[in-house]
Image 1: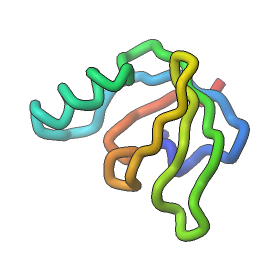
Image 2: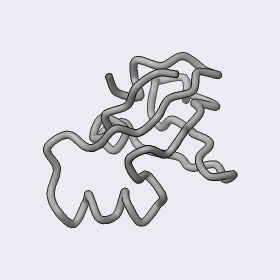
Image 3: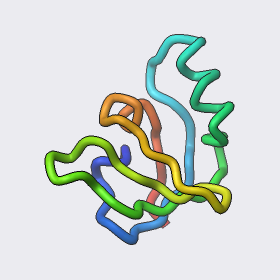
Image 4: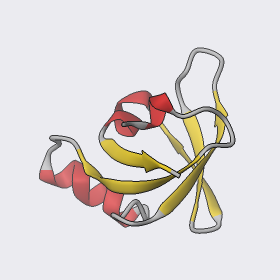
Amino acid sequence: MTLKDLSIGDRAKVLGFNETGKAYRRKLLSMGLTPGTEISLIRVAPMGDPVEILIRGYSLSLRKGEADALTIDKL
């Protein structure tokens, strides 16, 4: 499951990453998107890009491609 499968207000736990480059994975990890972290989908732009999530008490906007790199489990 990825972020595009969630609806606004849904919560999920980060399981890992799809196939991405090491540098990109490191960027996501540095933004706090580590496995086991709980996230909530706050907002989706009208065309579906970007999405805003709540993670570790702050809001983070991700482009559609960035969001697709995450594998999550809906809570």
